[in-house]
Length: 101
Image (tube, rainbow, N blue to C red):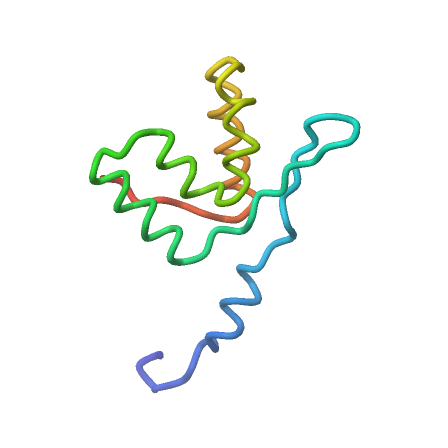
């Protein structure tokens, strides 16, 4: 609300603006991995995991949701930069920013 008690936005408008198309990553000619859009709960959990010093696997599993089981075998054999780039793309695609420590 503003000083004049005017409503700037509705909750539905925030949700509509934040809703993005599903992110799909092509891993072969016949397979895509779908990364679900993180929810507010996912983001809160991610920040808690970072503060608690959770493992990278736990943090990745939280952000990637059900796609984690399909992604982890690929990530384990790829150069580390591939995982970093993937996470950056997921966050950018969905407009997610995590707080620091």
